[in-house]
Length: 264
Image (tube, rainbow, N blue to C red; front, side, top):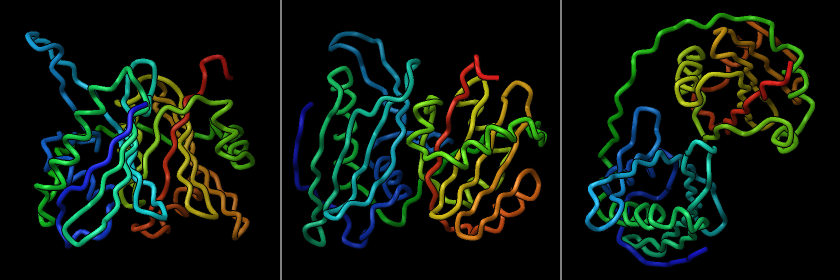
């Protein structure tokens, strides 16, 4: 593991580093943000080599007492591997201290390049600028089914930490509720990211949890909504309707678990 620390210039008007602002900063630093919100980094392999390696990087933000931790994880055939954590802490109106930790020697070059993009982006970022993403055409094919009813009941009873022990974690992100209310578009996007199989999505917001089980081959999904505050336990269309009532600006943690093939 390698560490580093540097003070860089940054716009004084940016007081909060959330996921959207980090995406804009990365784009300002030369990073490519694709239509799914991932960071695409291309690295030349070797000084004289013409071969270029492309990496798909997921990133998110965790608020800390001293600032915000921006974490980066690279997606490979073996899964998602965290390789960098960068703490951003504003020390003056025009200065931000970046402290970083590279976790994986295998991805040390990717870690260095990500830090370069982040520092360059902080210097170049203009708060009025936005990241333009192309939206792929979504073909709506999913239909609602009760096929996952029993599995979703199980997810209502366990902690997400315990769920990871039984179901491999395939994807994680922090999202606004308004960005995932188009359920069929969400399932299509995740199907393209993750490939064929059966998955369970959890969207957790404080005292409630919205869960979707879906099958990318059969094109079916089962929604469930659980509230420990109001004792609601809804399934199917009622669960979907209840989720649509959640305020659009609510920030939730999205986890996607893969259902192993041997599970019935």
